[in-house]
Amino acid sequence: MITALNIAAAILTIVFGLFGFLAPAWTATSLDLAPTTSNMGLSEMRASVGGLFVVTGVAVLWLNNPMAYAMLGVVYAGAALGRFVSVVLDNPPLAKALIFGGIELVLALWLILANINKSA
Image 1 (tube, rainbow, N blue to C red):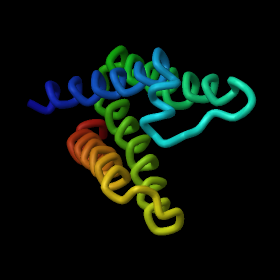
Image 2: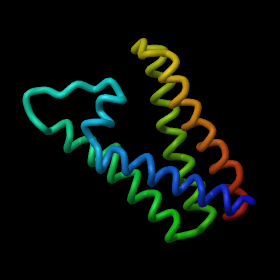
Image 3: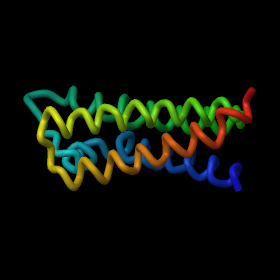
Image 4: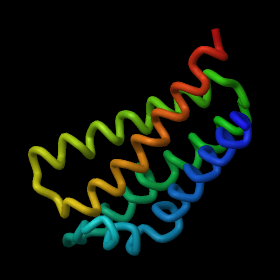
């Protein structure tokens, strides 16, 4: 079951990334990000919200190692931390921030706790 959930988390990471990679304008709108006078924001969406997640998910599947899955959990822990700090400091739309942060936190906890001891 651990293997199946690890693979599901990696595939979910790839799917999340594909939104930013293939549909950066839609993703930016979903995240309440507004365009400016250039398309640099779309480039950033493809890179940091898209390609970074796609390649990380693919690498984790390719490595298929408990430590790789644990490190994916660390990535999600960083995202959750940033999200929850934002809730305190930035006053984002609370429901959306808590949903996104909750998903990131659940993935972080699962991936770290299920895999960290298996890699020792």
